[in-house]
Amino acid sequence: MDRHPFDIRWFDTLESTNNYCKLLDPRSVGEFTVICARRQTAGIGQQGNVWVSEPGKNLTFSLILKPAFLAAEDQYNLTMALALAMAETLEQQLSAPHSPLSAFRFPLSAQIKWPNDIYVGDRKVCGILVTNQLSGGHIASSICGIGLNVNQMQFPDWVPNPTSLLLESPEHTPFDLDAVLGAVLDNILRRYSQLRQPSGPDAIRADYLSRLYRLGVEADYIHDGQPLRATITGIDRYGHLQLTAASGTTLTCGMKEIRFVI
Image 1 (spheres, helix red, strand yellow):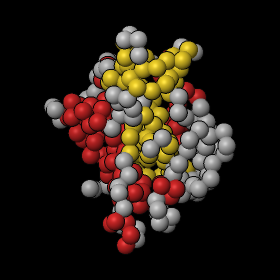
Image 2 (tube, one colour):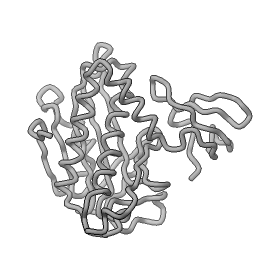
Image 3 (spheres, helix red, strand yellow):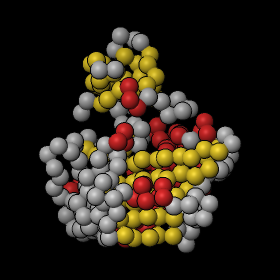
């Protein structure tokens, strides 16, 4: 797919690619501007968490989009599109023939842990943080921060269940960061374009649900500080997680209300 829409800007060191984007003038910065850092000194994850990345080993970048065609109440559609693009990229990269033995192994599956972490098995390989600016009931601009573990082999003990493309690849041959970034942007552009189509959002939602981690599986959670045994049944229009507790009670939860036990 044509990558010309993207204006890719690499930096050796930034505090945070998302914070850098927030300093740019939204009126003059172009859509599809990509701010990449080989090293982040204060990477940001969901709910103010720190994103840990070994310098020069992974992809840490932020993409500026201007999806004015999306209504404010539909902003989770963008999150779903980005999560799908990342999951699809991971599967493509992990199924690529890095060695003659690749053709004889079972392809790995990437899933989306609500709301937008990408998992291989029970391990996290990618995180996404979307910050939207609204205007007149629509999205004026979006800063889409993405951290993808690519070639990192070791993580601090306090980082929960991490993995990387290299750790999941049986050949353990390092990946080319520029090539992986190109594949990511190809898939983002394809899914972003799909959002503009009349049936695109419904198709994206269906594909997102097909990859939703633990969908239909009874598992343990912490809900409002209390243990909960429940089954994920879906998400609502606004991106809230829907579950049915073992007791039969139905729940609709925002990000700060529920935590996965893994």
